[in-house]
Image (cartoon, rainbow, N blue to C red; front, side):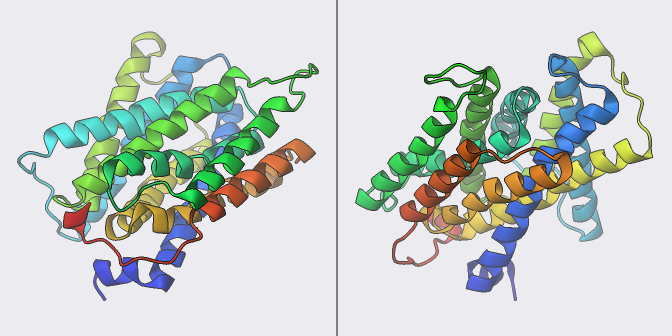
Length: 315
């Protein structure tokens, strides 16, 4: 079975999507645990960016090693430079600069719920990019329900004060999710001309190096003291990036955006559960309500008749 058949088969879509979202969900507690292990505080923005640089440089190298083992083409492909650089800026540099800074200022469970909004951003952007992916009544209702979920978070008493309130961390996480959605859709377009491994490997390597350069001018390249556990956490996070993005970008490549975005609601579900498990974070009524609304909104958006999968040239 080739890639196209696997990633358009119902079992292939379900298996790849659940695996990708399970991996992404685990990143929330593991990033916070890594911060604690390495002594990275909530205000240590450059150290957070440098750690992200380590993660994505390693993830890119792991993908390129995989390509080497499979004897896939590694050399520069004409015309790919600008596309790879743009994806690296959106999906690695901008997304994770905002993501790491935002997560350090928010609870892992809250960050996981906000991550579920990527589906909404993708659907709104796809409305303007694809003629056969317009926002209809069901999508509009789902978007409203989902964003009500964000208002539930904002109206909860994060600091003991009533009224609408989003912390800086939550705003940064939402910005990261927007950049992620843009990067996903651009990767989908690039996959019509280049392999998923090629795109992910080089954009993560380039983005990781850029993050390291941004931070290292102030922190140096090696300010952390890694022990065995910290190294295993870093390796886990690198594997999360390498595997999850490869799986999800393949799902996006061979299917219509609206037909597969429903699976992204599993990111907040897995993120909340794993944050509660690994970080012993309480799951408040506000978080549960927001999670239920965000998940319901994504399901409503995607409750439509399955359409035929797109070929790469239709992206």
